[in-house]
Length: 99
Image (tube, rainbow, N blue to C red; front, side, top):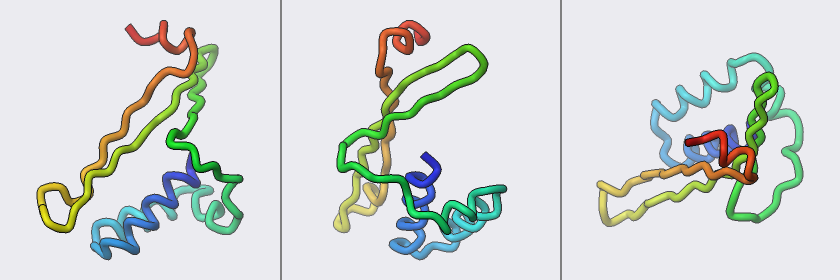
């Protein structure tokens, strides 16, 4: 998950070149253990349109997947890099956890 998120912020920093995005990237890389992620190869990637995620806290285990839709067009400044991320349960136990 961390590789996925860090790679996205790095790509954004290279693409938009804004000082805010570079500042976010630098803050992330300063967090304990995050800088070391850039020294290792990312885990094997698939081309699936979803990213499975496991959340665990104590006895609670939630299995979800996320999809990210990016709206972007060079002709309309109002649609410049709008992202919508949605999380969906992957199993019945996770579905029951959310009312």
